[in-house]
Image (tube, rainbow, N blue to C red):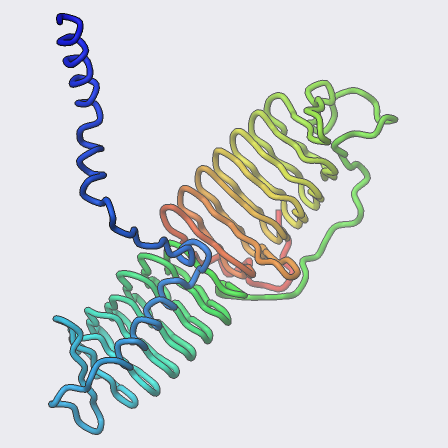
Length: 378
């Protein structure tokens, strides 16, 4: 009898550990869970495309309100109203609280406030100082100076983000993005992202260097430290990957021919060639006019000096800075640069792909001396 009482008490205590989970299971039992929309992580322009689909469905299924006119159709969607007009031109200082659809072009003056989403089927121009909830355009979209967007921006044509404008989420275009000084966003994605002062003239390179450091080094190289590289600190990890113990600051051009893990910070001199991946436990600094074909990953900050060409993925656990003249280009596939801290873009940068930050991506103006053709860059 005592054993039976003990067993019952034991089972009761055991059940208490799972009582909340059992109650939750009873609540959802027999109900179908909603499907996850995997497009959210697969499509950079997910927000714009999702809004377009929902708006198209609403306009196709909702009847026009009785107060509609030939130049303004009104639709009611729950507590929301949708205004549809052929083309729209708002004066400065206008406040709009409804969802707005322009079948043609759209423009507004300075210091307007749009508290709901805006959809434009043609070209669009937003005056300086205007505040937006979100905006999608099927044509070109120009955001004036100091425009603020509380959510996302999406354009089928060229997207111009004016100086000192702020976008709290994604900015996407299926054509190109021009990102002017002082503007910032959480992420940018387009076939081409460019900052001000674009100059596609190639940088002047010095004559072929006399000394080049190779990793892995050739068997006939003298086994002694030179130009910041100590062969005694390099060892094979297997699978063709090498590790370097400590900081690696190479003062001569580097030719990297195999994946490398640096247990410290990593830097290379100007006109280096990195044909494989680099992972550094601290910071990474790439010298001017270098070519980066492998991926760069670091736990600290990352700096690409002027005129670096990369065709890969950049990932920094700290801040990232892409200097004047950096190019991120790769055939068929986009490149990407992401940092946990602030990601700074200087002038004359062109990237085909994505730039993002857990904090913000910001464009800054480069001194005028750098805007001259082929300047001397240290």
